[in-house]
Amino acid sequence: APDRVLAGLEGLISNYRIRTAHLNAVKAQPELMHGIIKIFSLSPYLSRIFLSNQYYLNILIEEWSILKSLRVIEERLGRAVEGAENLESVLAAFKRMEELRIGILFLLDILKVEDLFRGLSRLAEAIIKAVLNEFDCKGLSVIALGKLGGREMTFGSDLDIVFVSETPEAMTAAEKVMKILTAYTDMGILYSVDTRLRPDGARGILAQDIKGYRAYYMKNARNWEIQALLKARPVGGNQRLGRSFINMAKEVILEKGRNIKKDDISAMRDRIIKELANESKGIDIKLGPGGVGAIEFYVQLLQLSNAREFPEILVQNTLTALSRLVKKGVVDLPGKNTFYKSYKYYRRLQTFLRLNEEHVVAGGTYVTGLAAKFMNHRSEDEFLKHLRTLRKDVLKAIDKI
Image (tube, rainbow, N blue to C red; front, side):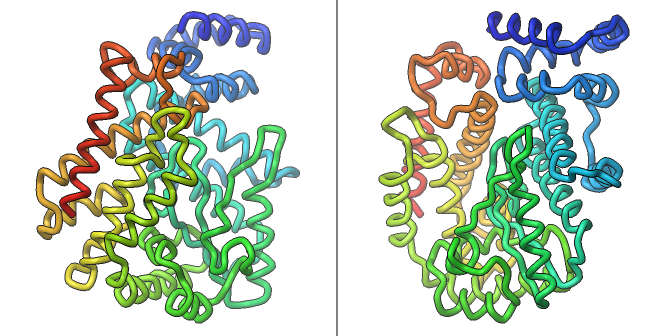
């Protein structure tokens, strides 16, 4: 993508007053230089971040290749927000910088897609904890669901969280935390939060106590809400409350999960394909038939159906759950291989599409041509054929469940 690279380099020169020291520092790290070219050629999203602030170039020169633990991210973020006048802007700048670093490592193939997910999930956790530290949150716990719960976040993933509170003060704190996490800044929104995951959806109250959650899940929860509890994981706040929520979630899953049948999952999947998938625009690898969502739904069905016999299969991460289902003989090896191979391929491709601000694979487009090369195919036709084959293989494996 030479045109993209040229435009990026022109932006770099015009936006920044590049000093000789900067150029020498980049030249001294050939892999970083290669990474910057990768950003410009393969990701408009990362290019915009990179060109928005000269500070990012300085950070990349110093520490672009360091793989950070959650503790290190929390420490760095803690120092960044200390005494900050505009917390939301500091958090947004930190998030963009980490996304830039992680994105470079991914595009250079230094970071595998599973490690990218863990990195972006750690980043979200650190941001949640930094926000909690700003308020009196003794009686508040934040529970992750969805991609954050499974440590499977990619670029643009929603923040799927619910709040557990036991005091009126904690309810007020939850509202303040939510306001910051969803704040609009000059760099865009910090995170989108899916409010449908709380009891009664967007109409429901923001935080409840354990008793309220248990009553809702046992009496009123829909199948997909029981299913969502498989991803539950405490990510900040009161640890005792967090543990209580997880224990409650396991009780609900063991009691109600076995009532969810394959026909129920199939009906949900059909509705998603009909109402939400963008198949008219191309191959929707997330929501379309035989895609990411299909694999996740049916792995979760097997967890729900077999949790009473094998409680150790109750883990949040899709691939970890799949491995444990195989160990227990719930999934045969051919089925596991199909799901495993397809899921990793889809999620790597999905991440590349997100970096190009696309959600479907549409034949004949510039991004699809780039995606074919990125996914190591010799041509776009070979790439599209491979995608269709994967979908068929996944659907065949699902039929055998």
